[in-house]
Image (tube, rainbow, N blue to C red; front, side, top):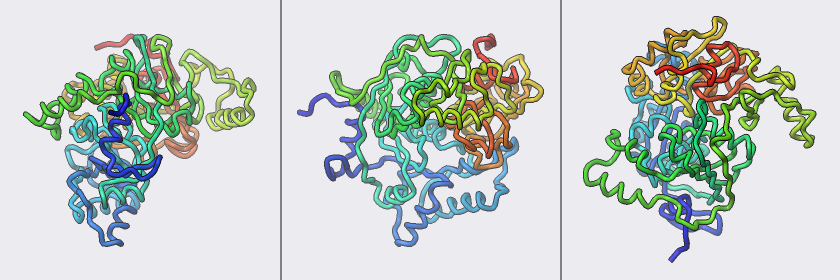
Length: 472
């Protein structure tokens, strides 16, 4: 009998078609998610080789990266290159028999929002996609990971991948989160602690009382953004919250199939005594609302803190990196974070655009107004999230506060569409990356939770959400 195993090892073992060597296996992929941006070359490769998709029913394609998010939705994509990506995806899905949620589909949205809300990713599955934030599905107890274009083609052709097994890191967060602190702050605290490469080569399992207390959306935020520490997988053991989330989703099992699935899912947890390659423990009570000051997600500080001084950094490489970041961000060491003005506020992305995120922002915005000089946008993660928000009246809260209420898509997370910062503009953002030019050439991004973005939009500068009593 095998010894105690981690959840990660259980899923990989259950999907191993063949052991190739000490480090690699041929891994079966249950679900394959495609988008218009990372799939064209893969489909072209299939066409050139005369191959078909091996299991087209296991794939789903979504338009999300390049589509406009203007308040009135149309099928028009003004940029010719982006329009060709959208039309080629439709052509490929038609020819290879793959289901497509196109721009006008009522289920359209960001792939990592759409897949969970449809019940397409389920506990214990392996899910591949040509996007690094596929780790999001770890919140459901599924092993999701991003793959390159050649691997997208390989999955289409064989439903398998040559997969390198990862090391395992368990992050345990005990205690209770203080008021104003969200799931986004947990994952930013982890990245700040271990660095942008601290989880490279690892699958990260999140555990502890603070993780168990999070709703599924919060767990998705954490599993999504741990990629920014280099992780290639993330997991949270599925529990009652996950079962409640998945039950009655459109693609979830029904009746006796549901009962059998639930019985199987109960074993999806790391065994007592399972050994992890590394461990990290955090105290939830010690986490404050966090913001980034630089050009890496590891550049985090509490909102009550100050911009760090590179001169205090002993390592010369890190010191140069800090100085470059400050030069790009236009910040001086010692500046109070709460004194940094913003031009834009953005709530959206696969990290923070679910209905729970919008509710958190609305609680801050209700009865308040965005600062006159700030342009503020909310882009729901899917058309379903948009409908749910409108049914709750959240759209009215946003519009009355001065936010633009837009259609779903990746939007200003990555400036691959017409939503982007102008050079020099500074943005409070609920997204996952603050690299140079990520939200537009010369744009300056400060990452934070949706509620913190709402607070900054009202104040006109980075602000502590705890100073804004929340309503409803």
